[in-house]
Amino acid sequence: MKNIHKFLLALATFSLIFLVLTPYFTEDFIDLQQKKENEETEKRLLKEEAARKITEKKNYLMGKFDQTQREDFVLVPAEYSLAPNKIYLRKETYAAYLEMRNAAKKNYIDLQLASATRNFDYQKDIWNKKWNGITLVDGKKLPESIPDGRERFEKILEYSAVPGTSRHHWGTDIDINNAVPEYFEEGKGKIEYEWLKENAPLFGFCQTYNEKGTDRFAGYNEEKWHWSYLPLARGFTEEYKNLISDQDIKGFLGDEYVASENIIKNYVLSINPDCL
Figure 1: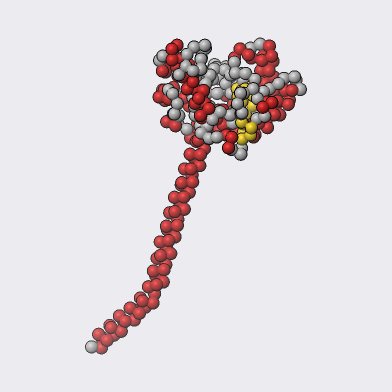
Figure 2: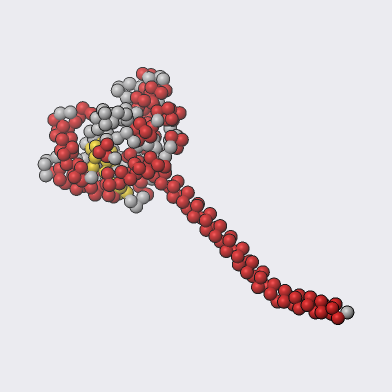
């Protein structure tokens, strides 16, 4: 009987202690559970933010934005432009262009912009009009002169970038004075090109598409008018290589030929080695 009494007393004491401490144990458990949930939420938010930033960067590299609404772009004054529409550049590119333009003026050379930033939709319009024959290529409607899809795709690629792959998307690249090869072969155009070759690198610009040969065996034909602002473009080129794949390049006429042409390797990255 005495042992039973001791047992009951011990049980009552334990029960009392349990009742007293249970709130503390429960509170600690809830705190630990809440902490775990908070950590998981934070990890999820960080992962979502990282994914958002990658998507945002990919959209930028592929020109899927409105340059007129971005604070890092500036409207080029009409007096510096030959384009029929308003054109924009990254602020850094524009500042470097102005310095180069002012230097050229001292040699009686006028460097105006034939083209600047072209976003995805603008480039798509250029591409699709060549593809369906609205814009003539070599004086011909391509659907008639080149009915084969892949051959037509390759023909347009001689001078026009596939939408989503143009360096003009970045606000770093400019076309100067003309976009016709013959213009730079003699006279005024030749003088301008010789000045650019010698002086443009001093202002951060590089002729993106030089003559194809052992240093550049693939890609677009030579474009003496196309110059890239390297302090920005070098970084964007590297990001494009790391973030964009052939599967991302779509949404225009003939996009089924992207993979077979190895567009990123043979065009986006096949540029003047001096520009890498």
